[in-house]
Image (cartoon, rainbow, N blue to C red; front, side):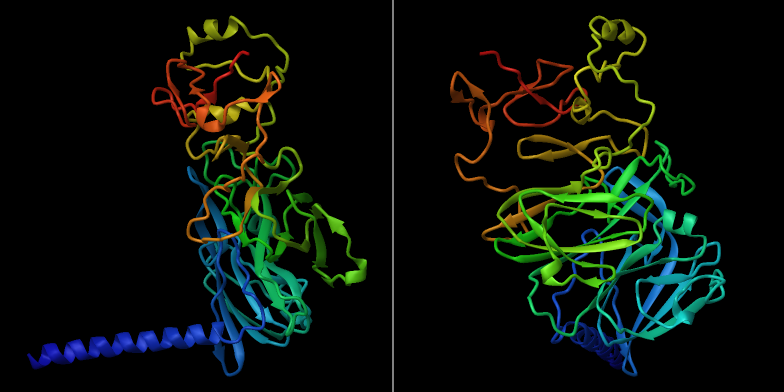
Length: 447
């Protein structure tokens, strides 16, 4: 009995000790912060601990399995189990120490992109330091002499390592900020080429990309940005990929308030709805949140798409009547597509190659969103329940609707949805066909 009692007491003491350490760790990171913590959608923030007055972080670069969206997982190279790596958050004036352990099969180095530091800490393999060999840990230590949105990324075999996802945010907050930010978000842009049915991106591809991502996630796998009506929202966009991306926000006018070089004086700011972010750049913009569900996406037409092919024949305006039936005699599941545009691709919901996202997907309150890739949703609510945001309840009379004979059509709830392949399958709400899996489409009514 005495041994059992001692064991129980020791176990309780261990639990108390762990709890105290967690409380201390939480207190160190959450007490009297001079900033609003950054949220990295689909991502995380890197923990730190104080060691002799220095903020100490630990990064591990390694091969990871990463889900781009439900139904697609890739073999990537990232930091601490994710791509982009966890966001490093600091304050101007901090002394930081960053331990980097290499678990890749080749040497690496980490460059602190845009950060003012001694040359020997800049992280360029062969130029400012030896490469970090597999299994080795290197230490970087410097004092932060600026604030702004910066990045970290591999600077050894960049083509492969960055191409497979080795990058992350390095955010330095000012000691004091004149204007309070209520919500602060960070989004990393990237593009990939992944052969349909495969798992490993091809980092040697330079221009013909087929997947485009926010924080290495493609819509409908991107987490929404949420805010309360009237919130001051900052969005930080970073890019170390190959292409420039014009990021457009619906329903708002914003001001670009900072670049990777620092703050833009208020007198030099002007209103925008789209900001261009080129490779190697960051851009911060701020706006006041307006209620609704608002799209945010890259405005290059192919970038809010998934699994884009480059050998799709152009059959716009081509009459395929009769062709479909003849081909079905050889291929029973064949469907002629493309003569009226590509939106029907979003309705197909048919099984493709394994581990391959459909070109367009995502269900909204009025049917298929028909988007993918670099696309997410800003969800702003008057009364925000962060655990259950749901779809925006549009006030009566504020939703566009079809007009017939001078009057509007019945509301969405009165619409009939049918299967293009099995017209006998009908229901009053969007969904998928139980026979073939295709998304049901609104019935075309003649008036």
